[in-house]
Image 1 (cartoon, rainbow, N blue to C red):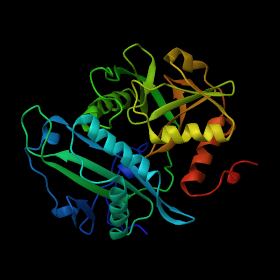
Image 2: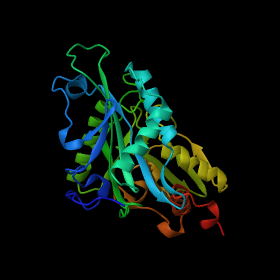
Image 3: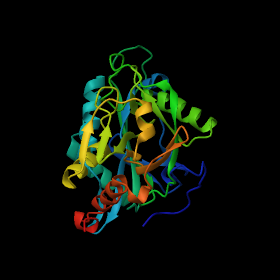
Image 4: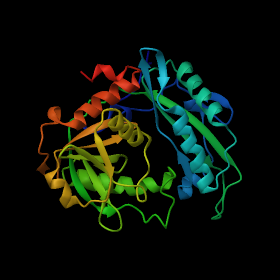
Length: 315
């Protein structure tokens, strides 16, 4: 059951998980060893994360499954959070299992089943450009649509590139890196598109502002390799689905020009799951979505997160 009292706002294409006020007077979150009211929680205005974006975070989904409320790939997400801390030199004093159990407590205290969970590791006051000593851990959650009802996305190619992987740590989910994503999304909306594809420094397709990318051509699924992308947990799940369904999947570099002959394409992320792409720079996909392998992958993914078997989609 999800509590009410949340106020909606935002664009029609945006997932409802992102369109709402994230807490009300009853909302409880975990912060530095305690469960506190979100409306009473605070942070130091001289924090290093606030000033420099030096912090890490995750996005996790919980679902009301056939076996009760379940966090999807919670251990994988918290392993990545811990790895992000290590890569960025940010102390982390909780184990993966402790973070998972704390998250279930946050869901229970807020009476949430279908929810989006935001763990955030943020740094204390420090105006120097050095690693922090004071670090806070927050886990918050809010209601989220069971499966996002997003129309197929109209996508453009962004003028912004993904950062040079030798300039930043692309494997870490770092707060400050998402300025790049905000710029690309804002540009796309101003141009009349729903979303965008960012390229790497060599002009090859990298990923969306907050999602990995796949496209289908002649019975094969293609996705960009590691390097200039965040290796997404949903991306990994999609590749596992392809192996299980005996769909050929290949990591390779490709340019935007290669996509104009694509049969289908999609973005994938924890928040939005699998989002069909209608067109790229107004060039439509070759196949109807319902006839594509991409659609089969989406339906399989939706059954997996609900703890259903592959037999629901394989006939």
